[in-house]
Image (cartoon, rainbow over all chains, first blue to last red; front, side, top):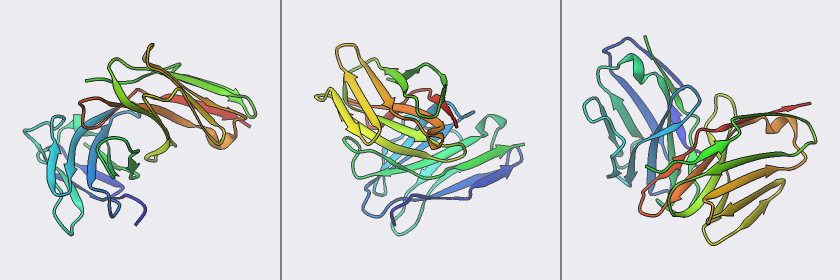
Length: 114
Length: 111
């Protein structure tokens, strides 16, 4: 399809619970990126994939965050043992290349940790 | 890591007026991109300008790039209420593997 589909739109978790977010990139786009946006401000890069392989994970908090992009499945971002500061909107984007092209973003998943 | 910085942070204008916002960055880039974010939505790609380009137009949008000053501007001409949104610049820096986004610039167009 021509849009990046993110589910769910909203997710509420109690502190310490697990959160799992999904992203279906545009078919034909080899790269998937995850960003975190806190308080409508900056977009913090988390991780990128080239097809099913991790391409750049330098933005990932290693202890509790993990992500996958498996063949024939939506990509996923999982947060174990959520903390209050994980509350944010998580955006997924896909692109034909890691450079030289614009990204197509999904509408995001708003995670609220209470 | 490199990051664009937009200036000013918030702009309120009347419909029909032009809106200009700026972005500065710190390192060498392959290209610079502008995105729009409507409230509660994802980013929409507006325009990409390559490092060897100085100006680019797309409809009512005009983007300039000055690599010597490491800055870019986005001009929206004849603004409409539907242009109300936050605008972000993003840099595709040499040696980096992702876009780095600035803080965003909120534009309110009053009908």
